[in-house]
Image (cartoon, rainbow, N blue to C red):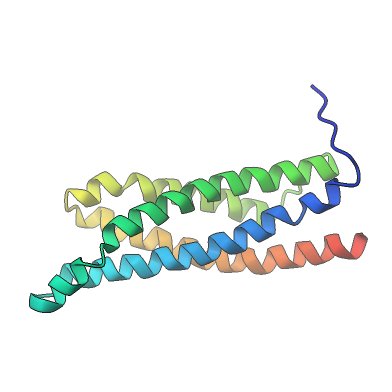
Length: 156
């Protein structure tokens, strides 16, 4: 199968992945905020706990987490696809490897949900550790992605 994409469109494909990833980074930070609120709710007592429960942070965290997981997987595949479409190859380097690792980490993190729902502390701490690491890598990915984008723009 030969996928023919007009040459006038190919350069603009380079901007979809970075834009999507910056939105995803913001959503990931929001998911972290919601996770912290869940923890606050779990540890709260009395009226504060009643007030925090009204925020339904657990439901929002699951919903945003599902979106983050889906968009990260699709964004990673899309970034690789655009790179291949425009260059006929993938560039094997830290940005690609970190992105693949992050995608694996978020899948493992999400897979811990049933264990956390049953109260397994090890799953909760593993989930938190994976996601904090993921967020740190995501910040680094954002910076290296901007450098890659600057190189692409300079060649346009």
